[in-house]
Amino acid sequence: MNSVLQMLYKLEQLMLDIDEIYTNSKENSFLITYYFMETFYLMNNYEMKPEWLNQFRQVICSQYPQFKLNEQQDAQEFLLALLDMLHEELRNPKCGKIPIFEFQQEGEVVLTSLISYIEFENSPITKHFGNIIRTQIICQSCNYSNNKLEIAFSLLINVESSKNTVLEMLQQSFNKEVVKMKCPKCELEKKFDKQTTVIKYSEQLLICLNRYKIPGGLIDRWWNGNEIQKSTKSITLNNKLIIGKYEKILIGIVDHSGSKDKGHYRYFHLSGNDWVCFNDAKINLLCEQSIQKLIHQNETSYILLYSKQSS
Ligand SMILES: [Zn+2]
Image 1 (cartoon, helix red, strand yellow):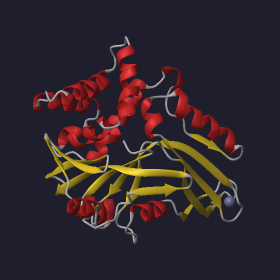
Image 2: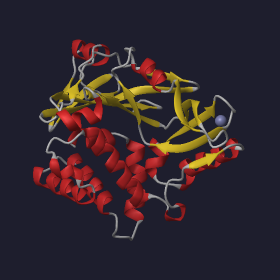
Image 3: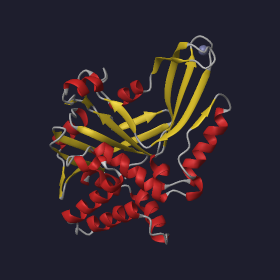
């Protein structure tokens, strides 16, 4: 929880955008935003108390009951739940829920309106973290096609692929695949080419690394109680991601040591040319050797933050 908050609090423009809405609002329904901002002020003034963080956790639990069960809650789930809740509170009320568009043709018109929705009309969360993802399916028999556009606050990639760098794994996650489903035109079960593409990357790109797998899959776990396995595959984090015309710099890493149920999270942040480690209240500068290990032989990273500019 701490490490995720520390990561978000380092994003200066995000905090200014949220603060602007928060301080100008006369509404008192901003419960999560209230805790999020007050925690930020407390941390900045070194006045953070564990009781306060517990209270914050309780408030989140009351809306997301799954957080009650586990003391050691998954940082990725926590991050996404927090972003969802902040978005709900801070969005422009006129806009309503995040739209999902489906269309056969005229895709560009929908795309333009979705981009303007993200950039101008909605919350600081969509503005900073909103990726636009298109899922296209094409029937191999009759060429029937369907497109879906949606907004995702993070990209999930599987570390157990044949690739070793974040960029390669990212590209592999968005490869073409073949799926079987009923074709509305053929009215029969057919093979479809399915292509998922990120058509707009967010300014602050959050990448969640999936390091857990369940041997035999979910159903086998249900029957045989197979334990979830954690992967400690060593991967190389790209310092810089060049995706199409976008260039992003790695500025933040949340890592996790220990097992799924027991362990510890830390946050690493690039500050100028230095990597700083935030380990609960302790802060220390990484030496060259630790940086090399952090970037090139990383076995514990969980959430990566790539930014348009280094901050
Ligand atoms: Zn068909």
